[in-house]
Length: 580
Ligand code: ASP
Image: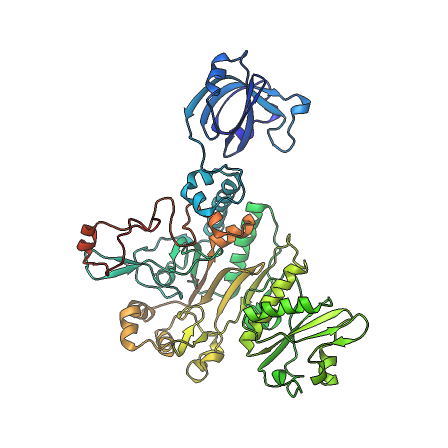
C-alpha cells in the first residue's frame, strides 16, 4: 500500500497503485504523491532514469489512477517530511502506467467548506478525502468490535424484515405500496422492536442485530431518516446484566476505535435527578455548573413571579455579568421559552445588584448567596420550562466560559424515566419510550389512577451530552400490555388490528424480556469527533432528505403506479426527480 512504504524497504523494488494526490514539476523531475486507503507515498519520475514513464507522467492530473514500479530510496535530509509516515523515503520510478484518467475536479479534495450538496453529488470523490476515509474505517471497526463482543456473550445475530408493519417509535412511517395486495402498504421498520420481542418469545433468548431503521422525521445535523442501530434483546433480563454488557461493548469500541480506555461501571442518575440538576435527560457531565433549587425558600416571595411559580431554580456563574451580557443571556432564555431572566449579581465590592433584589427577603437572598464576583441566574415557572431554559443556558455558558473538558468522555446511565407523557395536541397520554416498556412493579397500580406518576423500567446511555442508547424491560404479560394500550387510548379494535399478533404471542409462554438499542451513526460521530452525522455515513441524504448523487427520491413510470393502483393527486409529482 502507498501509505506503508517505510524506511525498512529502502533498496527494495516495489509496485504501487493509487490515486494522484498532487503532482509537482521540479526542473525536469516530476514528483507525484500517490495515495491509497493507507496513506501517501512520494514517487519521483526522472527523465534520465525512466524516459517512458516521464513521457507518460506529463499528462497526469489529480485523481488519475496510476500503477508504478521502482526502487525505494531514502530522501535527501532536506526533503524529509516528518508529518508523513512515509516521509523519509520516496520511490524512484522505473515504469509508470496510467490506469484511469480524471477530468478537472468539481472541488479539490483538500478544500475546506465545500458546499455539502456538491460534495454529496460527487460522493465518490468526497469519500476519497482522508477524513471521510478515516470515519468510514472507524465505523467498520466499531461494527466488527460490537459483533465480537455480542457473539462472545452468546447473542445470535438474526435479521428481521424491512418490509414490515408499522412499529411505534414516535416518528412517521415510510410506506411501501404492495403490488400483490393492491391498496395495502408495508411500513419500513422504525425499529425491529416487536420482531425482537417475538424472537425472544420464540426461544432465541439472546438476540442482536446491526439493524437499519427508518424514521420519517425532519432532518438536523444530528438526525437522519435512515439510521443503523445495534439492537439487543434478551430473555430473563436483569438491568444489571444489560448495563454490564453494554458497558463492555462501549469500552471495547472506544478502546479499539480511538485507543481510549473507559472506566466502568458508568455512573447513574435517575431521570428525576438529571432533570433537577442539569435540566436535561441527556446531561453533559464534562462540566459542573449544576442547577440549584430555590422553590421552597421562594414559596412566599415578595417577588410575584417566584411566589406563583411551580418551580424556581438557579445557576450560579462565577462571573459578574454586565448589563449588555445579561441582555444577551435574556434573549437566549427567551428563545427557549422563558418570559424573562431574573438575576442577582453579588459584586466583588460586596454590593448586590439586581432589579428584583428589593422584592426578596433576607432569607431568600441568603439561600442563594454566592461568592463575591458571581451572578445568579433564575428560572421560574412550570418545571418543564425551567428545565428547558436553564438546561440550555447551562450548556451555552459551559461553552462560553470554556468549562467543557473537550478531551473527556463522560458516560452516564439515566434511569427511572416517567412511563408516560401528556400529549397536549391529542389530549391523551403517550408512551415516553414505546408502548411495550414495563412500569416498575410499584407503578403498575398507577396506570389508571395517576398515569403521569408511573415510572418506567427504561434507561438511556448518555455520552458527553449525547444520547447514544436506550432501552427498557418490556411488558411480558398480555393483560398488562392491554392495560397499557387502554391507557394510551388505543381502542380494542385497533389493539387487535395493529398488535393482535403480539398480544397473542404474549399469551403463549412469553418469558420476561428486555433490551436496548444503540445508534451506530451517533456513536461513530462521537468517536470520530464529527458534528454532522452525514460525515460518518457513506451515502447519506442531504438536509432535504434527497440523495443529490442518484436523485432519489424520483418519480416513477405511470405504468408502475397503475400496477400499484395508485394515482397522484393533481399538482403532485412529475417534476423529473426531487433533486431537479
Ligand atoms: N426500540 C427502541 C429504539 O429503537 C430501543 C429498545 O427499546 O430496545 O429506540
